Image (cartoon, rainbow, N blue to C red; front, side, top):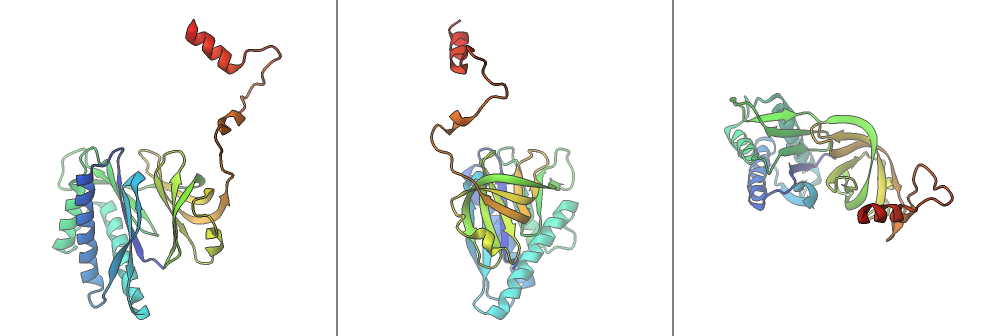
Length: 257
């Protein structure tokens, strides 16, 4: 079930004030989309995940009646369609309230917040500040997608609605959203907090190369933990010759020379 929406702010040090502003407009945007696409449903939007590495926030819609669950999907699909529209750089036809909230979000693109990511289980779009002045202040960027693998540690795991977990990428120390398909519940067994290798279709920010999400996952493999001093297990490409200097001795001689 496609019942969650994610907004992430990219930057090395995202200011708290910018995050608060983003969340205010994120809520306003979700409320506006709910009013337009699910006016008769009583949807409660709950925080599903908060990830510091990317200032990423995922919310999930809940309804009391099972038959009203489709209303949550309609709102998320509208959020997903909005992301696709942002990619084209044109909000013609959208309600003034929705346009206002999107413009409010793009105003926080000030350098410290390098980009905003609109994400759902289906796609994401990266929004940056337009370098050349124009009527539209943002510049959309379509992520690059390719089959690959990401190594990291599972921090958040949920099977409510859709099957989703958050992986902290070892290389960048940033949150990566991983979306499983129905029938892949067995891949989620006993992986919380574990170091794993997730294989599937990886979407990346084309500018930084950072992974944003993994979809159509084919495998989740648990990796052995690395203990203190495990770096000593690393070996050079060229074996040490008999009587040769140990690396630490060579470094020490160079330092003391």
